Amino acid sequence: MVEGRIMAIDYGKKRTGLAVTDPLRLIASRLATVPSAEIWTFLEDYFQKETVALVLVGYPVQMNNEPSEAVAWINPFLKTFVKKFPQMPVKQVDERFTSRMAFQAMIDGGVKKTDRRDKSLVDGVSATIILQSYLEQQKFL
Image (cartoon, rainbow, N blue to C red; front, side, top):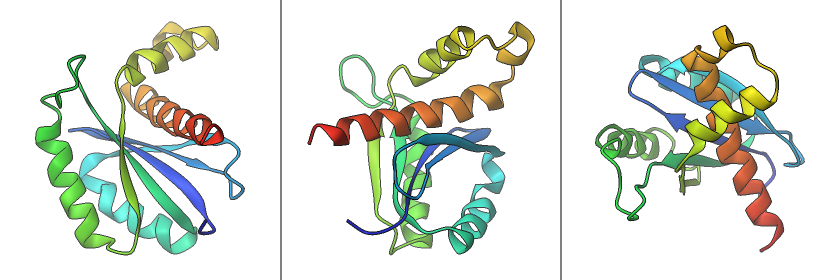
């Protein structure tokens, strides 16, 4: 496998949560939450500084396995990503329930109620959950 970190992106209309692994791909950590309008500048800067081998993009699917309405802004993001970073491998991963799981993880972790209202924190934790789930799936392949 190619050297480098794995990055997860939880792209949203307003904000985008990002998480990355350590270089050995053992631990998923919240990286940042950036305004979606600034995502391209953020990614360009990050890819210049760090070696990233794979990008995972959360793809929202409904209970019936049909894409959710959020694909209306995620599909254009994916299309632009592939154009801007043609050498970067990218995978879509099911992100069902990640926001709910992120919220529960924050409760379980003792995050104060006022801090849990911070949507940018939820987005970053969601990206981390997407990444951690992917890492755990890879252990069994």
